[in-house]
Image (cartoon, rainbow over all chains, first blue to last red):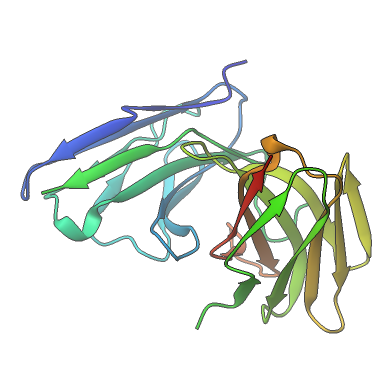
Length: 116
Length: 115
């Protein structure tokens, strides 16, 4: 199993450009999520999905869109990149939801994004 | 204010020595607490998961403790190795009825093990 994969590993954008960060998992997990990690701060939830066709906003959703057409894939779209979106982005998946369940969340290797 | 505070922010230890990292949280009601290890340039990897009824959980040279009454957890690294150099993140899960659950991430403690 490849686990959770993310592409690209690095990306530089200019302000106003759009792009899609790809995330895929091969563990048949229903729950997938996107986080951003900034220096000195904990990971913050951007968007999440509890199954194909179902997505919802997390803590910091502004400027990002997601869709979930299959169980395996959960792409994150930046609509119009801004310097404040410079960050490291992590995709994660789990078998069930985090709040009440005793399960493990698997993270991808991350995408380091710089917006100039 | 972050509901999960970790200390110290960073520490340097000699190879072979022990160290203890602290995590204080205010998340309530509480479901479970996790410790992750994040190597530079990689995603976090789970070390331990503890529910409110568990006091200690080990994973090799890593031992996590939990005091749910005082809302404190610690991660003890025994006989440190160079490969232990990483950021260690404390994550607390709140008990909710929504479809996702509520995770609060600490900012992490950066550990550097020197020869």
